[in-house]
Image 1 (cartoon, helix red, strand yellow):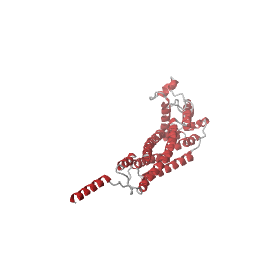
Image 2 (spheres, rainbow, N blue to C red):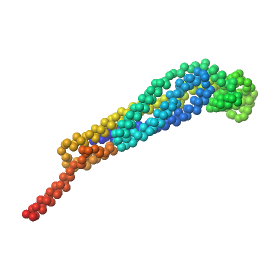
Image 3 (cartoon, helix red, strand yellow):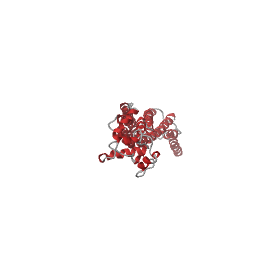
Image 4 (spheres, rainbow, N blue to C red):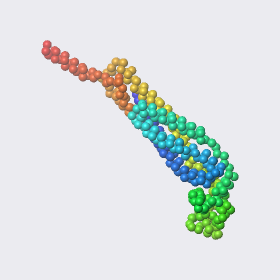
Length: 309
């Protein structure tokens, strides 16, 4: 009875862990997709500078293709683990344990390989000014679009201040993407009438803060650690369940060497076997004979013999 209760408890815990694997893997994929667009924008603006190298070192563990593939594979493995736990199948559970072990090793190796603290200073932001003279040129429309997108989303203008546009380019006023309320010609109107309509903070500090780490990156790190801890716990529970099921399949063979039980034993035995949800189908598990029906037949036979005599 205690063994059946333990098997049922192990199965419930594995159900919960597999659900967490689905949920956390989906969250990792969602946050990684969410952070990819601003990361590509920052990498475009910081190309060929130390800031680009720092951004790659910071975010490569989060959006690396290996991590994305591992999360997708973990969803499939969790489904196999759910089916193996539901059917108490030793083969599926063994495959589930091996897959979790491989995924954990890949995640650990990837974390060690990509871990590196980026060395970036605020003085490195000045190098962003080298990307400004090409703004608005026909050959660099992609760079113009990137600057406008970043200044609009992060509500900034220039590198340190909006005057950087006047210093590094031949423009007489900043781009319209510097305006708090954007409309065609808003930057010209703000430049000559009200400078408060322009974003007062430069994009350099914004990029510096992004490289140092965002809330999305902290969420990804927390999910990564949580998945690793859950995998260790799931592997330990799977090993315990495999041992319990293997021992439960061997015990009927040991019980077959004992004398048969009485007439009231089959019902309790079948009840205990079904409480965990796992059925025993091994050789050696046989129902004890129905002694009550045999006694009735013996009594009828004796009655016939007395009547004939």
